[in-house]
Image 1 (tube, rainbow, N blue to C red):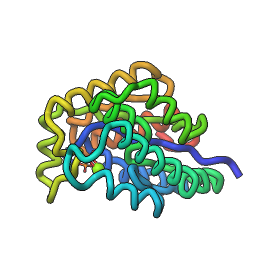
Image 2 (image 1 turned 60 degrees about the vertical axis):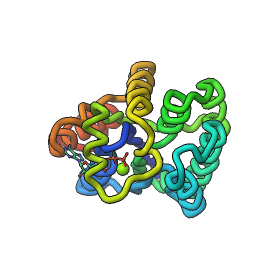
Image 3 (image 1 turned 30 degrees about the vertical axis):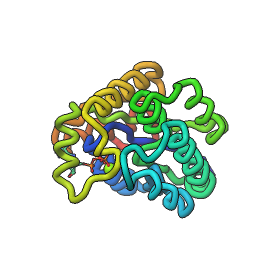
Length: 212
Ligand SMILES: Nc1ncnc2c1ncn2[C@@H]1O[C@H](COP(=O)(O)OP(=O)(O)OP(=O)(O)O)[C@@H](O)[C@H]1O
Ligand SMILES: [Mg+2]
């Protein structure tokens, strides 16, 4: 059994990660590739319980490193109970956010030490990393505007505009530092255009599918 591939979608609030993760899942399934669509924080029963501690309540609820540790604990559970078993069965796993969100939100955004976060990432993942990370890039005001149009708002959406600007720069900096693993997509375009851009990247980086 050939091991599956692991693709993560990253980017700020309202960039279109959830919409595009589902579209990529559909595109892969239409080509006969078995998939698992998952998300962070969450993605396994234990990690979904931890998610509630992270996305609800007052903005100032957690000290940044403690918050990153909760994310890391959730991620380890997600890896062990959802991601690894699926990859071993040959399924392609698509995650709506992953470790980059922790490093960018708690590090760039909230000021936790980046070196400490990298160590935390290594501890929780033991060297495991995505085969491909697509960063959906959108101006902060546009992304928050889209997110605001949805019902309710979570704890991260309520953090200030400066925070979200720093987050945007953080994702772009990480993408620039490793062009093999990351690709940046302009997320301001309409959903079909973004969808096609992502499929093109997947076809180029992780061949076997998508006859052009
Ligand atoms: N390309 C697009 N053009 C216009 N609207 C879009 C586009 N993609 C998504 N949207 C809309 O913007 C909103 C946010 O999209 P989505 O929930 O996929 O973003 P997200 O990146 O998952 O946000 P969050 O980080 O808050 O979960 C949704 O209402 C969605 O329908
Ligand atoms: Mg989403």
